[in-house]
Image (tube, rainbow, N blue to C red):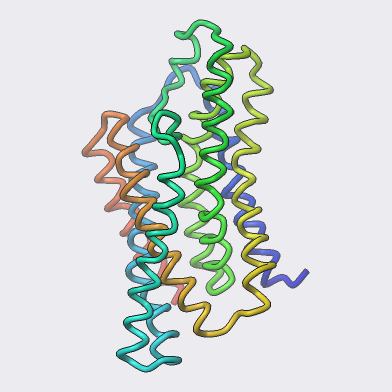
Length: 266
């Protein structure tokens, strides 16, 4: 496989497997570090928002205005951005709110809840919901890394941070239901594998038809996907851990880190 494709696939795999890190934290940590989780989620959101508006949207606009002209290219860029939002929004609506995987869970819950086999269904549905959400995230990481490996690393890291609490969200109900830490860990890890599957689908379906116009549309769509994820998932989850100011500090830090990285590497 071409190295230019292998690296994006590996980045996407690493981001997806971060759900396993969340599961491991749930089983081996004694208590939830709410401040750290809140700051980390805010940091991830800050990185995604900054990258989306400053880098991805700009690169998409450059590609599309070059192919379509200034007026039509700008219109296609904006349209693609909102199509990305619509795409992830539809996926989000397909997940029943009662099984929403973005509810904040704490490690302390592991010992507080009695064993309840009925919760296995919740764990399975949460894993499925996270897998559905992770699919477009895999496409976002892969296509960004193909276009710009440095940018792909930043996005993969941000999505990996975002996946850690999702690993806890899968592990907690499965452990309640079965008392089996290994089963909860495996299910959590598998839910993250939807990201490399999304990357492979992007590679197999889109790469044969890749052009400046298609890449521009994809980058603008990815920007929309990541803005939606940040506003709908990351920032609310960060605040749910009860550290609202810490979450905002994380957002600002994420933007600053990303801005500094782009200035140094470009």
